[in-house]
Length: 57
Image 1: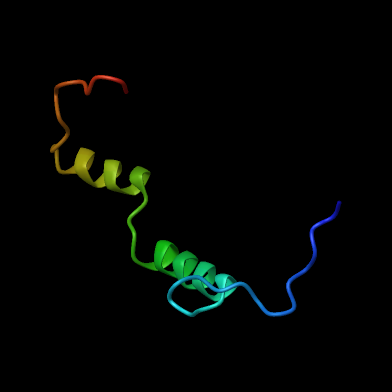
Image 2: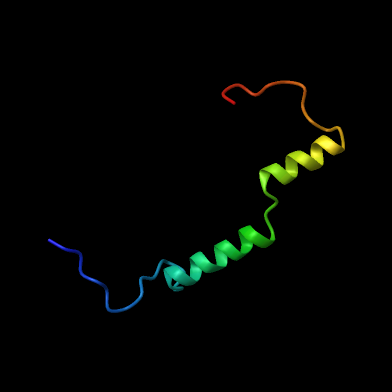
């Protein structure tokens, strides 16, 4: 059996199409969220790194 292609774009609770939601999420990640490596570099530069190791990492 093959999956049928929906005639209308999939929608989630918000009423927005999935592709539009993914697009908005990607835009927010790229423009507003500071990547971990950048955050690490900032904290290292400011000498604010923790001296204790977190269990599991």
